[in-house]
Image (cartoon, rainbow, N blue to C red; front, side, top):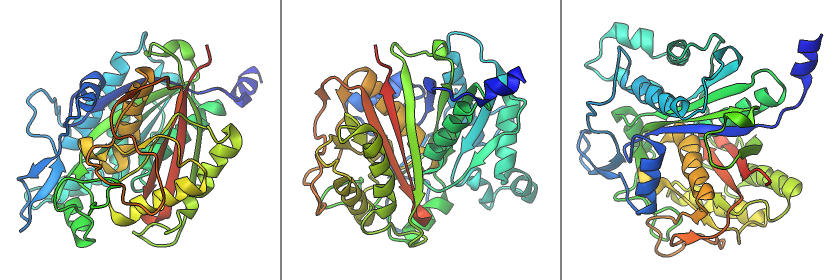
Length: 385
């Protein structure tokens, strides 16, 4: 009865560690330094047989990456998890730890013609990917897979937060990972959603996305003493919605995103955050929809940026990858600008961050949107002194 009572308590959720492995850098501090310096890992793609040039953020062969019988995606995910665990002040109790893997396409490169049928049939399943990773790190519980387009890793954080709040686990490892492949590029190309150059989120001349790849991991916990950060970071809220209007186009008025932003405003007030990290893909319709949702929610004067120009759109991983950069910005009291923005190109005004700015930062909102009309927002904040 005592154990059941303990499990029924609502717990506060702390963000205690993180790990990155993306083309811009192999750890969080290295990536954040590149971002501060305005560096982008997006380059002209050389691996894809398209008549036009593609612009992607993709790894070259990395001899330091240990595959150990893993696929390329699994090796990236493992490295990000290792990076996050290594920063913890003490060993993680895996008996009280949940694991969530978030991805849109998983091991999609195994569909390429040179792969054998046995590789395809055995390794393409997302539950297989989750099982291999959780087993590798000694987590005895059944892992969870979340694959809901580009909101996947934000949804993973929301689900992990709720499991901790209701006492199911004391800690949850949430990992987002996706790769650039001919399959994914072909899909976005068929929708005419790829940029003909470097992406320009929210700019008047934006014409599409640049895809990126990599992995990010955030460890959340009910135990604040497990934190690896100089200040305690709380994952304070998270909401999700679905427009259900179109399989690939967003709701023109941003209805679903506005609904969940309004929940944050209702709970925390109009000054609900010191900045907003938008999804900001660089497509005409996505950026216009986000601008409309932000304005309808009364948040248009809040400083806003998109991080997609730095390392591309990492699909199911983008929510976690970008949250990690924002956490560092908040800890260092630095507003990160949007690269590629010359002239604002949305009908609704947004207070875009155009250059690095030092100011006290105590909270931020990370937004995400994706195919099928899915939307998600999460809010991080520093703990009160």
